Every structure is written in structure tokens, then in C-alpha cells.
Amino acid sequence: MNITGQKLREKFLTYFQKNNHAIISSASLIPENDPTVLFTTAGMHPLVPYLMGEKHPSGTRLVDVQKCWRTGDIEEVGDTTHHTFFEMLGNWSLGDYDKIQAIDFAWEFLTKELVIEDKYLAVSVFAGNENVGEDKIAYDKWLSLGVKAPRIAKLGVDDNWWGPAGTSGPCGPDTEIFYWVGDKDAVPEDFDPTDKNWVEIWNNVFMEYNKTIDGQFLPLAQKNIDTGMGLERTLAVLNGLADNYLTDLFYPLIQKIEDLSAKKYTEDTKSFRVIADHMRSATFLLGDPKGVSPSNTGQGYVLRRVIRRAIRFAKNLNIQAGFTTILVQVVIDNFKNTYPELEKNKSFIFTELQKEEEKFNQTLQNGLKQFEKLFQANNLNAQTAFELFATYGFPIELTLELAQEKGLKFSEAEYKEAFLKHQELSRTASAGMFKGGLADDSDMSRKYHTATHLLHQALRTVLGDHVEQRGSNINAERMRFDFVHPDKMTPEQISQVEDLVNQQINAKLPMSWQEMTVEEAKNKGAIGLFGHKYGEKVKVYTVGSDANFFSREICGGPHVENTSELGHFKILKEESSSAGIRRIKAILE
Image (cartoon, rainbow, N blue to C red; front, side, top):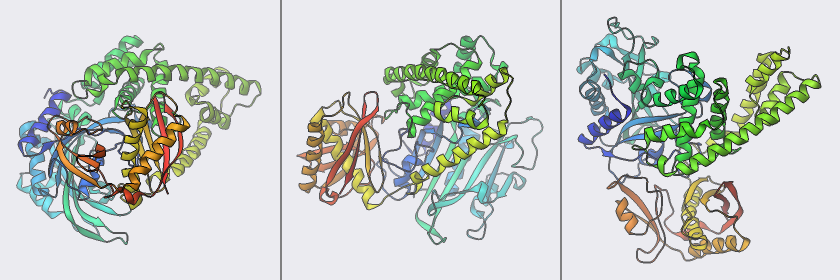
């Protein structure tokens, strides 16, 4: 089969729309008011409130193509399948159809819509354990569809169980579908999940249980279906390719890198792949409606890391400075019809990348100076090489290369040991991000979530309508709010905003919500990210009466019912987040 990424997206969405699923837009890569993760990491992430029982404006059957960004695979990028940015095709049942219907949908889509011969497919189901029994319903369903028993693997928790995201919460068995990518004339009758020629292309999760704090698995009141099919991997499989970078999602970038380097892809596949993946990832993160800028903390730090990693690998190919914006244009041209925000935010993307290239080149110069000092002082070893990286951002590969040129050798294993210690400290430091679990729905979180609405409108009232939210982060102790504004706020402006928020709290205003289309929301004066498709329904929260409101904003929740519940609002700090973006840190007392 010869199929493009766009065609696969369209086929998937159209099929499920025909089966009464509402098409919903991809959420931002920056999670909304979620302190537990840096990025949207899976299709289910933006739907957590609805998987937990909240009503979705578009109904109980949903389908989407969700943009995802994962930080765990950065070091793996360079092989044929790992990516930092990827797209996840997903269909969802929020307490609607069951696993039998979900399996029917998956099988029909693969064998009828994509016309994959069933002799190339195999499946796995949950084998059961001491807590939950074997998933016999899924097993019997696959048999009824004609899948022979030797092609159905019964696997344990590590392979066929999802969740919970924290120590407790929704979870359940899953069934995975595999496609044979090996010799088409030598497909084995038995399915061996350890055989790399069987590639997983679809995962159907059945959220049937709630794991309690004391370890019990109780049936959920609302049972959900959560499916995911990675666009990049599935597209490669369908086109008979063993390398995701040869699909149309990446190949235009590969060709442009060949032009810039005067080398062929086959000469240095790892460098080509790292550059292509990281420049695509950086473009989507910078171009997101809530786009972030490179920085030394949080999301900005990860963005900086992938940009600089791309620049470093570009040096392996002797690609000249200024290449980042050339590759960005290729990404924008390739994806702008599906994700128009990339074209819209092109100027911001270009500016940030140009600045980051310049900064990193300066970093390399500074690192070279420090390297020479260490060499002259006869103090170059594994530990100081690591300090060059940790303090100056100087890549270890360059340190090793320069040391070798000077006839010096030290153990890379010792360096790796120092690096792993640093990595472990970083993990420990960031673990606090995850203590609230996947969906921190505490009373204080609801209060802070509501306070962001008041703050957003107060900033627009005091500073002007150019103010737009560019991300927020809340937990039970405080809130952080990023917004568009070119200048540092004056003490008078900060005081005015603080007073305006507290006036709304003291006025004891009711908070209500309605479901409406995006156009209706705009007509009613709502603010928010209008990245949704025309006609798609959204939730609109209003602070105050319908006729005389203080704030009206598109949002998913959760919120308090009356502003009087918030207490007293206090701004602790106003500072720069990045160019043109300011940040406020505040508390409720």
C-alpha cells in the first residue's frame, strides 16, 4: 500500500465519524493547568477529566489526531522508530460502547478500510493475575473474528495492562494488534511477541477498574475505551518501510539535510535522523498556540536541549550556521494544512531558533576556552569533562574528540557514571511534579484554576486586549501564569490587577458553564485558544451573570461554584518568561 500521512489521518477520522464519533481537535502540547507533566504525552492526557466522569461537550464517542511530545525518548532518537514529537490516532468511548465494539472497530478499520490482509496480523490479550482474571471476553472476540488461537498471545501486566497513572485510579487490561513486517511469504503461523518482525500498531485499552489506595481493583462506574495508534510507525508499516524517516512525514526533511550537507542519508543515518526529528519537534513546540521559548528550566529547558542536540549533530555533517530556519520552513510547508498554527506562529519560531543558534555557538566558544584552561592545568579527566557539560553545556562528544586530538584519554565509563548521578539528581528534583497524580482535582487546585480566569481578565483590563495566556501551572500551593505582554509590569499595574481580582472574589460572583460551538463562544465574548474546528462544541465558563459577566473563557475545568470560595489573591512575583512573554506567580491566602 502507498499511503501518505494526511491520507491516513483522513481515513481514520472519516471511518470513526461514520460510526458516530465526534471529531475533536488536537489539544495543545502544553497541558492546561496540569502540574504533573511537562508536555501532552498521549492522546488520553487532555481527556482525563472526561475519562474520570465529567461530561464532554461533543458527547460520549470521540475521535482525534493528538499531537504528543515525550522527553523520555530523546537519547533513543537516531534509530528508525523513536521520536520526541509524534501524532497519536485515537478513538474514545466515554462510558458508551464496550470492548467487543472497540475490537470490531479496530479490526474493520485495518482489514476493510486499510485493506490489510488478516494473515499479516496478530493480537495479544491480558492473561490475568492474582488481582484480575484473564480477559476472556477479548480473547473470544478475536476468535469470533477469525483470528486463530496461535495468533493470540496471552501476556501479563507488563505487556497488556494499562495504569493507573499514579498509585491509584482508573486502569484496566488492553489488547494490542501487531503487523508482520518481515518476509511476506514467510509469515509464521504462531505469534511470537518477542520476534521483532511483529510490530505493534494499535493498542486498545479497556478502562474497567479503579485501583484503590489499599490495592483493591473495583469495577468503574463509567467504563471507557482508550485507543492509540502511532501515525509515524503505522504509516511506515503500511508503506512497507522499516524506517519511519522514509515516510512523507520526515523524508522532505531528510532530502533538505542532504542538500545542506552534500551528503547522502545512508552515510550517517543517526545524524540525519536526530536533526530531522529534533527540528520537527522544536517547530511544533515553538509553533504551539501556547508555545514556549528555550530556557534553563522546565519545558523551555527540554526545548533548548533538542535544538542544541540538532545543532551539534549538524556539525557532524558540516552543515553551516543558520540551517535551523531552513529546515523549519520544510516542516511548516509539510504540516501547515493539518496544523495551521505553525504558519501563524512562523515569525516567533524563526526568531527563537535564530537566537538559540547564536547562543549555542557562544556556548561552544566558551566551552573551548574552558577546555584549554583544563588542558593547560593538566586537569582534564572524566569529572571535569562532565562539569564542562553541566556548567557550560559543552557536549561530551566534543570534549572526547578534542582530548583525543591532544593525545589524552580518559574513561568514557567514568564520565557516564558522573552523568548518571546527575541524571538521578534531576529525576529526584523533578519528582515533586508528579506527586499530585495524573489529575490533581483537589479543592485548592480547583480554586487556583478558577483564579487563572480572574487573573487573565484582570490583566486584559489593566494592560490591554493584546494579553493572551501562554501557559499556566498550578498545584495545591500556588499558581503560575504566563501571558503575552512586551514590557515589565509597573508596581501600580501589579497592584491594579491584584485589586481587580480581589474585587471579583469579594463580590461573590457565581461561576457557570455552557456548551456551545466555537463561533457561539466568540459571539458571546469568550476568550481562550480558538484552535478548535468550526462547529465543534466547547465548554465556556462565565464568572458573573450572563448579562453582566467579568470573565468568559473557553476551558475544560475544574472550577469552584462561587468566587467567594477563593479567599484572598496575592501576586508574589512578576518576571520575564521569554521574549514578549511575562510570568506571574501568585497564591491564594
